[in-house]
Image 1 (tube, rainbow, N blue to C red):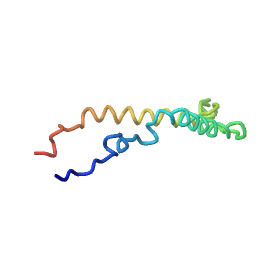
Image 2: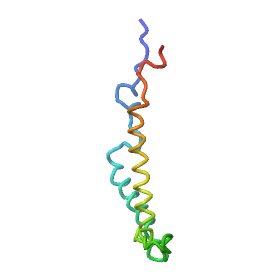
Image 3: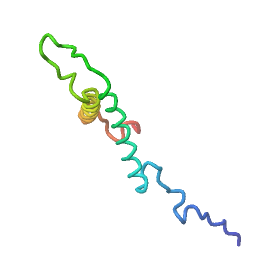
Amino acid sequence: MNTPPKDTNTQTGQDERKHWLYRSENLPKLWLIQIVILLLALLPEFFVHHHPHFEQSSFTLDTSFGFFAWYGFMTCAGMVAVAKILGIFLKRKDTYYDE
């Protein structure tokens, strides 16, 4: 009787390899890359003189060190939070497209 050849990939788990971003050995590399990008974003702060946009009202927050870096981060985090909250109200049932 002929039996089909065994697929060695499914038995050893080779086909279930994780994407490189999800492998635990790459996590320290990803953290290092993230920290380097953050430092590169803050590096121009030492060489650029910022002029306040609302100088007449004595509002000078936009001249603080790293303003554009932390403002961008907070804005991005806020958009993610708003999207999560909207997802609660706008989600559909799992069987929405089956009907």
